Amino acid sequence: MSARVETAWYKGAWWLWLLAPLSLLFGLISGLRRGLFKLGLTPVYRAPVPVIVVGNLSVGGNGKTPVVVWLVHWLRTQGYNPGVISRGYGGKSAHYPLLVTADTPASVAGDEPVLIVTRTDCPLAVSPKRGEAAALLVSHGVDIIISDDGLQHYALARDIELVVVDGQRRFGNGHLLPMGPLRERKWRLNQVDAIINNGGPAEHNEFLMTLAPGALVAVSNLVAMSNLVNSESDKVTPTPPARVHALAGIGHPPRFFSMLRHLGFTLGHCVALGDHQAVAISQLHLLQSAPLLITEKDAVKWPGGHDNTWYVPVDAQLPLAFEHLLLTRLKELHHGD
Image 1 (cartoon, rainbow, N blue to C red):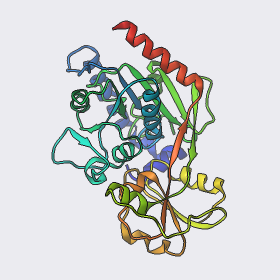
Image 2: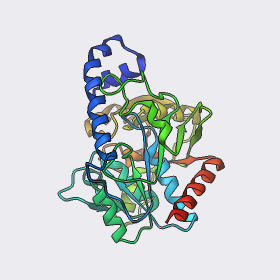
Image 3: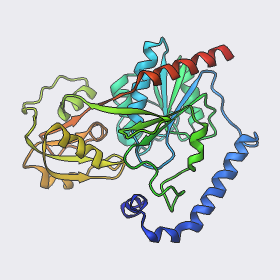
């Protein structure tokens, strides 16, 4: 979708009504497809281990990746050996399913899978057919699978569904694609196990998630780690209220810029890219006058071109009530075996 259309979804532009017939058609097709899976007329892959889907109703990034990273770490504390499957948006591989490592280029696997592997060192497989990716992970010994996105990928059976909602943008104008940002209507929320609200304000049936920024990391150090060599940046780490430039290629770049301001940085140029969009070195010529702060998602596919670039890692923080819900659901699954 173009940036103009995405902006219109959240501004309530009148001309979007011209797309209403296409939204109606989209709804009919998606409803028919969902019905075929429900009736068993279209094959569904059922993994021999539990599957947790982390998805959303709307297109664009809502904060699913931090939830997936949090889940990997949390499940390990509960004694599980988790693996992650992904569609691998933004990447192109010559073959699927692809087992991703920290050395796999983001251009092949996608930025989010490489980020998840770098942060968690967990088994991760990428494929347009998530059932194939899940089967590959099972063959590598995982005992629970997290699907990064895939709420609407009904060809994969799931045991727990988690939906992440952007607390600021929520569901835009509430219409289906292309008139609005929704892949499915909001009634679908009544069928999921939990709704995670990224950033708030959270409604009564939602679990509030906050993103805690970590210490800045020089992108040169990340590149060195991926190449298994030692490197130390000779640059001084920017600290507030230093003037910096900012760049973000995520679902909602203003959230990143707002976080930097909240940390006390003085922002010069702010470059907002589309979700998964690659950075062109030619875009960086205006940003050489100050340190450049980027997201971790951009860092894993960073092309170079700015020697004083730092990324800001973020960690999801979720309430104990959410942990209790997950524990209950997992116990129910085991009792049902």
